[in-house]
Image (cartoon, rainbow, N blue to C red; front, side, top):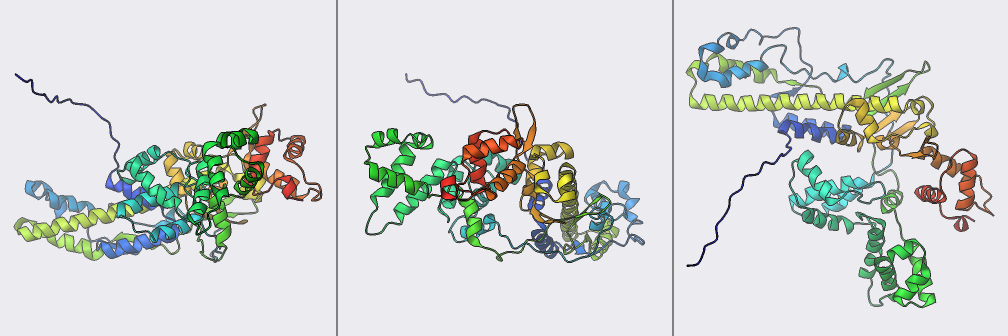
Length: 496
């Protein structure tokens, strides 16, 4: 007698973190800069009749004496109506007053200047709009674009991005789906965008050239591809003999291939910003920071075009009429009441989310000002101290992901110009003595040394290392080379 297979049922306990619809709304509003927030509020005003523009007149309130307040215990079957009374008292009507927590003393009404720089993130989204994708694929690709660093590379793992999408955006996906979306981005211009490391960045650029060949294939491109794909470690260490021996290359062909590889762009995102040019997009600052002669620093949210919100008076009056006659309600009237309640819940939730966004932005920006106070007083970039997201998160008590969302795509107007919030975050360099220095400060000193050098005999990286040591910046030669590359400054022989 054949023994049949038996299915075994097991029970496992799993902890899953989920966000409520209200939390998701707060997160989405937090990501929006001032201009997009204005559009989002106008869209909500059109969609929800319980919401309207304007300040709430608290001097007279006809709803606090609603007869529903004293009769809730008489009818246990009318709970859905009783809950509506929460909206009809003066204390509970949400009063959206942006002027209460977004101005500092001495604020002057003035025109806000515009920056004419453009972010490569917006340009990538334009390219994304030209692709034929499903809504899910487009959502994944947009999130990946927002995860690229300033060089246009993806430094996060796909697994961690999957977790972020599930927790913060409520989007479920697999690493395989993200990989397919990433391939779409890697097909954008300039080539190299979306690479996960320098090797992949160079290979994308070489393979793009191979794909664009027409009738006369260039064998040199295949040599370049073999060097980067099969001998990348030797390439980074400049072990030329090992590469030639491993691939069996002639001297001339090898030297020409290396020369062409060195022309490739390791920072495609930065080059995109330079290639686009200017005057393509105006940037409206989200914050205004004023520094006064007495050493005080004023912070203001730039919400001049964002309408103030309140509950619709006509809508609440309509609710009051329904609640007066709740004893003899028909089925249709009860359904109408439930519709009204849903709209009022949504209106209050939206108002609360906007207010929470305002408070979070102000708290975060104030912490940045406190941490970078010398810069805001003097405007000297070298005064920027090392600061990472964790520093601001610890000072505000907010999550690091929240600080990241606030700092992304937000700008601040200061007495010295308009800056991206990302500008104030910079790594620190710790010397052997334990002294922490700002990488931005070191880069500035390095640039000054190169600007003042003898162009007939420019400094080598070794010489720059010694100069920086004399100035009190004891860093390694490879670190000097890295900072020089970040400044887009070529090697000494190319600076003659």
